[in-house]
Length: 322
Image 1 (spheres, rainbow, N blue to C red):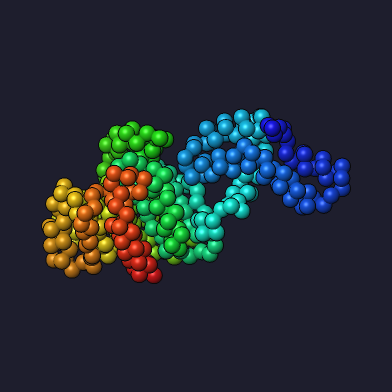
Image 2: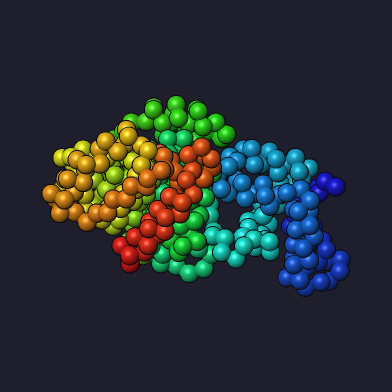
């Protein structure tokens, strides 16, 4: 069945006049009816994909219009979809609240995925920086994992200045990342720290983590952001030796045993960290390869190393962001 309703509000008022039912009760009844329709047409799933950034607004509205029968009906259903968001009875109790947002950077607004626990406020915050394939669902899932641990997490789409992360095209995303201006990119990620520091749900304590390309960027954020309170780069290229002195935040660096290109810089990095008397920890996971944390990549994922590194990371952030 295709649900067609040119004016949802008028429908509510008409039923109210006809049956003289309490308006609140009537709204609840209609919500139950609509919920059944949503399940039939997967509208709640469609809306969730839009909120998570997997579908852009134009595509979302087009699909919603096709499902409801008219653009007017689609527009009328939007507030109902928003009201029902996050109250799906099949949703796990610990599933965090998540949405796409934009935050201010020096030259433009940067698109990002934000996640936080369902209840409470004043959470320590974490910037999560993606690999060289852009803001993929895997990184959004990592942001959600941090939210489940009690953090406010923000995963910027670093490709925003070059058109954003393309949907279902990681090869194109890798091409776009090479188009980025490095200084502007670092500034955009430092701006994410500032955004979280003053976010109404934040305690003001902010950490940063990233993977692969995002690990290198995490090191750059540590160099360039005096507001950063902790940094956890995963298999990221190390900063220049002369920049290590600028790092204020404690560092926990994770490296794969089988990653000679990245690991070549560990010794010099550690030597300078010691020389500058920085608070740091370095872990190397023997038997694991570059990108071992990425469980969406079966060729690289190393479950044992990923679990151990994750536990250390969460404990580190909980300690340093108190």
